[in-house]
Length: 363
Ligand code: SF4
Image (cartoon, rainbow, N blue to C red; front, side):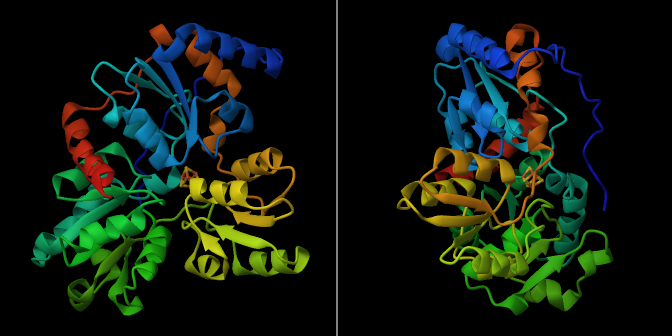
């Protein structure tokens, strides 16, 4: 499988590492306070707790996407998350707004599994069979901007883990089949929830000629699932759940839909990061949770809800989310006037916006 991401040299933070964290936090706070509402800081749930504590908005990728699009007074948006999130905020920002990423090396390996050129090849396979006109491309938010642009140009739409079921409904109102990329597991789980028979769901493996499918498979398919995955979420197994249930009787198990279908089937609940956060917040004191998602969010939930037990189903960390830290955030905000914002070509910006706007319009 081709890896599409450019190899970027990691910029070394210039903030002295002997500065106490509390001192850096105070400096960041005072810089942001001086900026007032002209600079807004967004943080994804998987960020370190000290970063989330500094944020004006925390949320899942959908909520942050909405927050970014609603910042009327902000001239600068600082996005603490991985590259595809920052690009999405930039696509939705006004022309006079700039979006900044504290560490451009924070990418997403799953997004890299579906390069735009590989997806164009798959689309050509569909076109050659006369099937493209009845196929709706659906890209997960976790994809590069040029792939969102391809999707927008071809009548498709973006989804997140919080709205994927409604987006599938939207797509099936407009076409006979969906090609979904880059996450096989989210696509599989949503197709299962949508009641698509298993024998009409096919995996498209970009490493194989024709994705490893026969002519008949293409024609019969209702969902083509790109063979990509998130290593943070495929880490979890049904055995982890069995172990949690014997260790904590009465435990409520939650799994992100990027987990495998076996894990999702065994869990008590599957939903986006924000939906899982709400479940914990609304539970009565004494409730016990075991959660299959990124460890930083789970540790923060445990810290914020000391009257409940919040456990990791098994420790799994996203090293890319972890690349954002106080040092590179401080480096950015203290000299933000001279920092490089995210820049996308006008064409990518326009076409990707089509796919994002379709998602934002889904009720
Ligand atoms: S948790 Fe998975 S999908 Fe999310 S940024 Fe990390 S590798 Fe990508």
